[in-house]
Image (tube, rainbow, N blue to C red; front, side, top):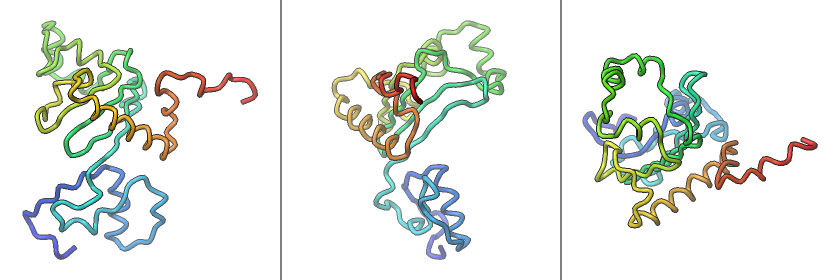
Length: 188
């Protein structure tokens, strides 16, 4: 790691899952890389644009036990696709965010906007949200219905499904609302 200079830039996309393997790698503790979803970024720290570090995945099930809202995300250098699995449900607030003066001002004043989004669009999200991060870093313009982004949308959906299959994500069964994947409940 001594070849990493202060002020250097690294454009690798990393995730929380990459921290444990990296810490173990830096501490020179041997481990089985199959035990982790993430990978060590120790070897690429001195590179500005390392190959193979241009995509990350994220998942969310609940913030607090009563704030259930499963989501899956794939993000690459240009785009972010969010799948709101429980999209028919109101987006829940963590208690600290609910109590925040910013939200309370919007809520109590019945304002139409919360930042750049309409409150109703913030609270009731569509199943898919696609953002062009180079043009919309604040993620306020959902491009899922824009025909110019149809190929990007389908490509990211394919990547997300493949990752869910690879990681044995139980939410994989919810794609296309195909309940047959859940079985009949008989002889389970």
